[in-house]
Image (cartoon, rainbow, N blue to C red; front, side):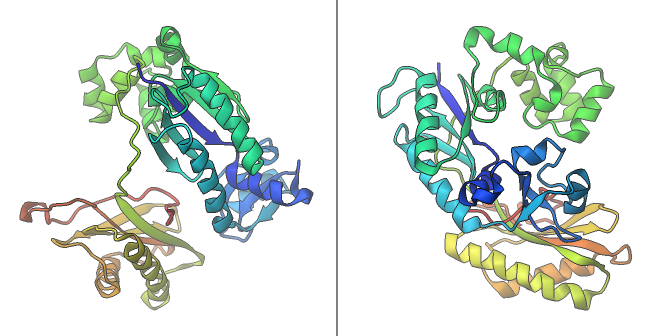
Length: 362
């Protein structure tokens, strides 16, 4: 049986700012821009007590917490600290799968220090992180990724929670469906309509019934409801997409105003593509209107896109297909479909949704 640890840094960006500035310690703090179109990138635990959350509009955050401190992000610092933390992980195992700058899975079934207890390893890692970078982390320990990830959310901040094999299914039965991987707001609402609110409710459904209602994800829900997750910890993850987006200070409905912003985003994406030798064939344009409705337009090529001219020209073509009269709040452009081979049959126009707040992150 595998021994899996999920490490999740506690309020990572905000905690670094509080670590580096004594005036911020113990005070509600948000990393982000406080302007009219600002968004909270991260919130300290003191801010969370007021209901401030990441991805929340800054004006909403200030309504909830008028004395909230806003600090501009320092991604170079966050990346540097992240590298230090990843080095600690690799002291124990080569099977480290980073999910972002502040969290990762570790498979410690076989580890460099030959420590039998995954719980002991998690304790040591938490202590080393505290000593090395002065930050706290929460850890989840179990025999698969699904359970370890959920366990790391218990007892935060600075928590440690273990789900043992004998306790796994009863534990999953107590979870609300929002805690399951892949269950967002829309899916949760659909489940509630079907009378599914907990893991125990989900477990009552057949696999076919879940697939009928939720597509391919139904297979995963069926397995997870039984505490099953056979996904390995992948130390070499292949990036499937790269994109950049921006929110305008004022809503726009003029191509002449939008194109210079698109030009900046294209340059960011192409710079990243060049540095990392990323190979993708699908260009995707994301648009968020003033009413927050989001659409995307895409075009797939037979060969990878790696030059500014092609990406910018395609972006402008896709933009020309969009009715701007509702006015645009946000625009994003990206390249995805990082595959080795693509046949003529695959070279068709696709509809691909971006994830909210995607950014260029190594």
